[in-house]
Length: 320
Image: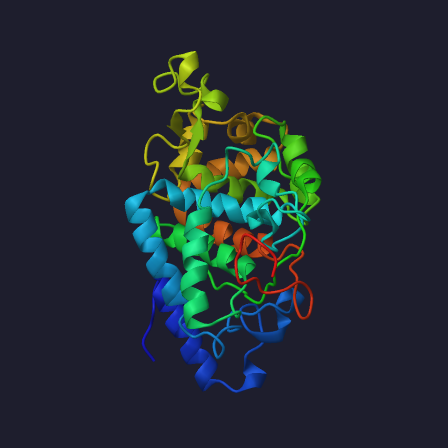
């Protein structure tokens, strides 16, 4: 059997080859079969929608080539979705007579992007496999693909989430951390989701790509945010390599150049473990990549809808 290393499609092919050659009894374990939390497993669409991975990655390649910032936006979209009601695509729902969209939450408004990319992926998947691939899984797949295409780690992704019929602005505002909390508040917000301080530091490393508005970061990015009328100007979270997923985010924090207060507090806060992890990841990119992948899988397992719960939306912006 050929050895596949590091590439998104390599893992897809390897997963399919193993699934086809091993008996069902051997498909259990950390990456396969029924032992996955909540009944999620990587081969969920193996029979019902074989081209799912190729369709997702092809749309992402075009979208990121056109606008490299969208990669970070799609990773953040997954985070904001999971931290509200769980990983159920509630964040994608628009306002309607029965839905008050989470897009209007204080923690989301004028911040989240990438919805059109999700729409495009969904449209292509509906052509290939009608009413099969959930919007919640598309968000998770887009986050992974965006990480890989930006030079970051890959991971075997459990699938099988279903889509929520509801949304909650209140839960979004309560659960999604603000950009200016202290470390104890950040840690508490993650612990409420079943995540640990290790996950907090690793997932914060996602800020190695992307931008924030000058309104929030003027004090730390004065060179690109010189005037009050530049509030909406985007400033890079990582000014060394803003579109490449690497460990320079942690190196910048060590130098006192974290963009958001919630970035720098990982080093200066009252958490010895967080500070040590920042130093470790700054020195060892491979360890950061490994933990980021593990933490993304863990985050993607926050309260998913499975089985007969929820639905598979035909349009990610509204319930069926």
